[in-house]
Every structure is written in structure tokens, then in C-alpha cells.
Length: 257
Image 1 (cartoon, rainbow, N blue to C red):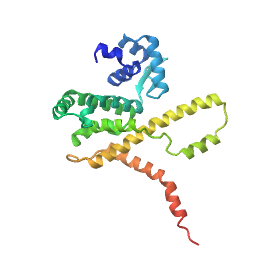
Image 2 (cartoon, rainbow, N blue to C red):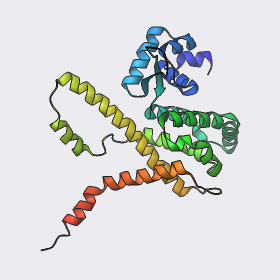
Image 3 (cartoon, rainbow, N blue to C red):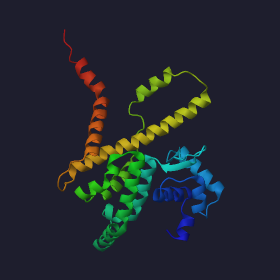
Image 4 (tube, rainbow, N blue to C red):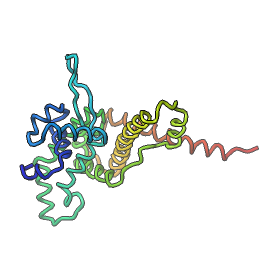
């Protein structure tokens, strides 16, 4: 990204892109590595990104008595970064370019951009403990189009965001039973809980579209993978759990005297 583009880009986007490229950073590290942004601007942007749950803050693994705060992308932040990359490949991914333009995009994608995305996904897979990203190199060997598919999935989710609450009625009951410990404090905590649920909803939706994509993609060679198999089993159990009320209804309306 050139200097003029850097100056024009939103400051929050600059910080997100920097963290995506370099991994978790402290506020001071960002100040040193982004000289065009003031310390106050960086502090404000980090707070906004954290409040929106695009970034999360965690203590560094340090022996010091006061460990530094590291900022890293959440799952939502990861999806937003992938969506930003879609703009680079938009004509190819959405088939809105001439054949010559598509050849140029494919060449650029194969020569460097795909490598950059794979490195990013693998790093985020370790940080987020998310198997499809952790196993992106394995997936690429067996499904050559998987990286482009990840970008399409991310773009699809951002255009159609999932609803955070899987079971809104259960959440309402939970809230009703909670002790009234002060409206202001409760509101802040519930907002944080909501953002956490939103992040999880993006993760679940990505997983669902990932498995749907594999269903339609042709694999190369043996496809034995313990991490992805375990994720599929856990996801299936979640789906079964979500359908318990439907199973109950079937039994309920099948009773006879």
C-alpha cells in the first residue's frame, strides 16, 4: 500500500490490516510501527475496534509483573479482513471481468496473494483454535480452490450477517432470572455478551458454509483429517441440539390415548 493510499484509508482499517499482517501487537508497538498515526489516534481506534469486537485484548505471555496488552483479530475481525481482500479479486471471484483481466487476476493470485492469505489464515487458525484455518495448507492440497472459496464465504457472510442469538427465547428467560445488580453495569455486560455471541454466530455461519462448499467440491487424494472430522462431529451435535424442540414437538403431537 502506497503512502497516498495509506493516508486515504480509514485509520481503523490501517490498524486492522497491520495486525492481520504482523499478528498480535501492543498499543506501543503500533505507535512505533505506524508513525503516521498519533498515539491518541491509535488509542481511540483500538478502543473502537475492541468495543465492536473486531479486536480483542489479551495479556502477553510475559514473566513481568505487568504483562503487556496484546490486540488481535477476533473471528469477526478475521472475516472482515478476508472481505477486504475480496475487493482485490472481485472481478475474478464474481466473474465480472474479461478473460484477459481474469487471467491477470489469477496470475496475481497464484504468484503471491494466495500465499499471503494462506499465511494469514494459518496464523489466525492457531490464535482462534479454528480447524479450517489451521488446516488451510492441507485443504489447499486436496481442494485447490479452497482459498478463493474462503474469500467468497467471508464476503457472503458480511453481506448477510447472521443473527447472534441461536435461541433467543432461552436468552430472554436467562435475563429474566438474573439478579438486578444495577442497570448500567448489567447493560455493559449484556452488550459485551451480545458481541461475543455475534462473533460466535459469524464463526458458526462460516463453518456451515465451509461444509456446504466441501459438499460441492471434488477432493484430490485421501481426505483423512482428524481436526476437521472432529469439527464436523461437534457441529453435527450442535445442529442436533438445536433441533431438540422439533423432536419434542414430533413426540408431543404423536401421543395417542
